[in-house]
Image 1 (cartoon, rainbow, N blue to C red):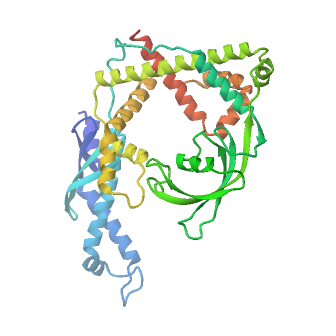
Image 2: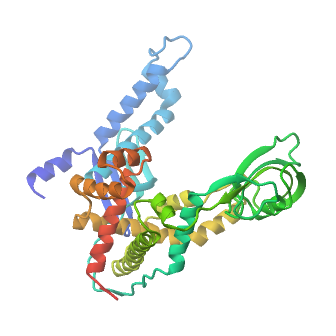
Length: 422
């Protein structure tokens, strides 16, 4: 330590010693200079005196001796809180800590007017050193596009271009129905209207089965059991009595599979051109998905080769986001659910941290010009200008996620290029 460092240490009101307990835990031992303790206590005493009301004295004019007699312990408590908060902020600043979770304060040793020392345990983001990012061997899934895959997409196009016609008959799969449903056990619960395609998964199986038994204009009362994984926790796994009325049935008339249909879908002259374009897009999508699968395998290899621990509070924060806790839920069941998914969540945390480090270390984030170029390509595929596609994505709050996705694609490509992918 040189002379300047010695003078700084001598005059620094907070003496901070830091101990690295593991990858994520830091122990801070802070000692506050006596002069700082005395000054802080005077400030807190003045604040208490300013707001104190005691009979016989004007507000703010109570003698210091009386304030000390009545509020001394409160002043000491406020002094400790103020100095601990300031000491923690100073320690974070001095050591450039990226803290996560709440700090834990202990071993407080306070002597009014003399000294204050305390310990803080705090979790930090681990400093990840990627010593090895290549030389791994992984298999790449084969990308195959079958005629059946193309047929599925073409059939979806047909449904999108279907014409609805009223049908005076019992409904079947593919028909669009208008129904009104009322919970018979809900007292004066009002009926709710719905309109959806049968067989497309919009309604639970028991409700669809009930609708199939009705003709337009008919209604009936049915016992319906909701699936255990139903979106509403209130209804999931329950059995209800529902009154279902079928108001309308419309049949979907699909267009013929011919050249005229192809030209209506897009800039295609023949049906064969449309099939070729669909096949090309399916293959490109398959290649991207294969790259993503390989990239995830390589990320696992990088994580294993560059082992590090993650802060438990960060894992807990992710668990809070992925596990919905319904009101009145069984605590043991919730804790069991958290334990069951914790390994996957920890892997996700490590994945995000490694990707962040990799993108930063290798400069894989996109410049503004590169991002605009990618947006232009996306806009061209959708028939939009750069300005139009940017406005559309901004409206949907997708610009930042898309830029992140592009950076991750680059990271995957970086990893693939440095390993043996067969």
